[in-house]
Length: 425
Image 1: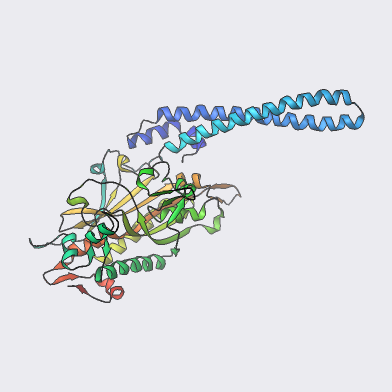
Image 2: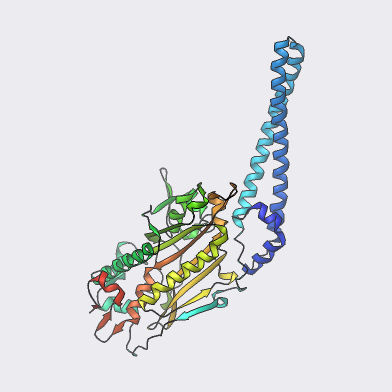
């Protein structure tokens, strides 16, 4: 959520940058400034009435002590009116604050200056690529056919148990899945990220704190009953970031670096076809996340470090990949700058997104009330960042497809200490 002070001081910049998202924010920004003036006016009236009421109360006490009951009684009549004023002004302030908060929740984050303009993913900017795309035989199979052939993932059984988008991993498929999780966590902890296990359900406050609400209600599974009002997490980002909600850190405590493995749940409905078959789009999937809470002065340096970290993992997996800087039209609601990682699937002849690494600047921390005391002793909002390190379904799909041979599927060398086998056959 944007800060009102930032909007007031950078009105034209905010409108200009939000235009990169193809959002005309001029009307919303004007309404924010009007509501802020109304809020300030209501607060001033309330403060004045409270101040006068306190002053009169002291005078009444002194008058009664001095025996001037007549004047004390007259002033008591005034305090009755002031109580009514305080009630009215308090209600006005609450109404204006609520309207301002609701409006601020609807305004997306301001894109970083480096974010390219654009409307769709076709306008994203490729900034790096590495790795040789394997040349497969004409008989090469997509991962959903390989999964069936080698009996390692059962999509039909998952459909029987729950529905489409909930696969069952079997045998070496389950072992490979677990190997990837452990490998990712080991890489992350070796890089200084502290591993945490977090809840897989969050309350509404947590979902609102990271920006899933009110922007992404339709993508989240909601448990709403007489006893519960909880959401299944779409990513470990939500509970892990909320570890720091309402915290006031010292400058020496920064940065905070966290990694967490969780299953992820997303309702998002997709179109049908090969590009969403198999592991390409699921309602439940596994992901290992990295998250950082940083000093604003070095958050973009930290973003570069996170990007370099994900690059190293893909290099060790020996998967061809590219990095995209997302354009304004494809940028997530809460992000100021996002880099997407995509691996090339030779069997499908297409790029598959496997990670997004983002800097949210103060957008999440303002909602979370996540602050730190700087060197002058003043509290200010921290910057939050997060990234997939990595999302498993498409990584697994890429390994199955790119590593297939006539005799089975090779396992990347870096994973064999975790799997205990070198091939699936």
